[in-house]
Image 1 (cartoon, helix red, strand yellow):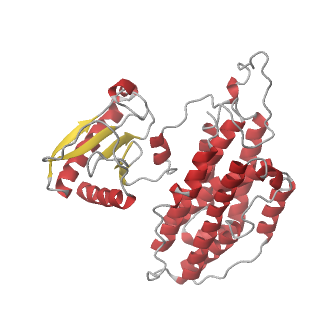
Image 2: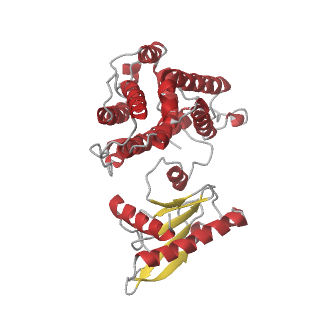
Image 3: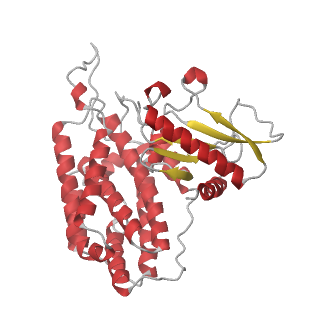
Length: 402
C-alpha cells in the first residue's frame, strides 16, 4: 500500500482541526495546594519539550529531507504545527494552575542534542517514541488530575498523538514493506525504555502526589510500544520474498517513499477504538463498543462493534456475538426512550461484501425509524456534524444509564 501523503496533509491541515472546543480554562479550580503545585510543575516542564522548543526537524540533514519533495515538506510542517498547538494548550493549563514556565532544563538540552546529532531518520524514530511515551503520560494526567479543563486539554492532545502515531506507522510500513530489522526493533524498545525511564526521573516527584506510580507509567509505555510494533510488517516474511528478475531494488534512503504493505491494514473501526480517529461513543468495554454512525441513515443511527477485529460473522465467537446483540437491544430501547417519535428499529448486520458490508469489521447497525421517514437503503448519506452526533450519543448513553 503506497504512502498517501495527500491523506495526511488533509488530516493535519483540515480534518483534525475540526471539532476542537477550547478547554474551559475559566472554570473554578478545586484542587488542594499539593496537587495543584505538582500538576502545574509537571505540565510546565512538559510544555517546554512538547512544542515549546524548536517546532521543526533539527537533525543535521533535516533540510535535505524537507527539500526532497513538496508534499514531504508540507506534511512535516503540519505535523509540527500540531506540536506547537500542544505547547499553547499546555501553557493555558500552566496559567490556570498558577505555575511557573520553564525556559530550559538539562533534559530538554539532552533531548535536542540527540535529535541534532544522529540524522533525520534517527530523529524521526526518537520523535515517534516520544509520541508513544507522551500518550501514556497524558492518559495518566487525564485520569489523575482531578480538573475538568486539564482533562479536556489531554483529550485534545491524545487525539493528536493518536494521529501522529498512525502517521508514523504508515510511514514505516511504506519504508519497510518486508518488515523492520531485528536491530531496528532492538533499538526501538531500548530507546522506548530509556525515554520512559527518563520521563519518570524528571517527573516522578510531581506525578507521585497525583497518585501516579512508576509501575503505572512503565506499564502504559510498554503496552504502547508493543502495540505499535505489532502493527508493523513482519520481518519473518523477508526471506521468502524475492525481487522480480530485472527489477532494481528500491532505495530506502528517503524516509517517505512509495511501498507496499504485505499485511492487512487495521479497519477504520479499529482506528476509532484505539482513539486514532474521533467518534461519539455511547458505550465501550473490553468486549464491545457502540458509537454513532458518521453518515447516519436516520438521526440516532448507532453502530455496535466488537473490540476484536473480525471480518466475518462466521469467525465471531458466539459469546462476543451475544454481547453485541444484547448491547444492540439496550441501545434500541434507549433510543426509543430518548426520542418518542421513534416508532421502530431496523437491526442490520451485513456479512460479506455482496451483502453490503463496507468495513471488514463485523458490526450491527441500530437504525431508528420514524413514521414517514422515507428511508431507502441505497446511496450515500450526508456526513453528520460532530455536535449532533455527540448530542445523540449523550441522549442514548443517558437512556442506557451510563
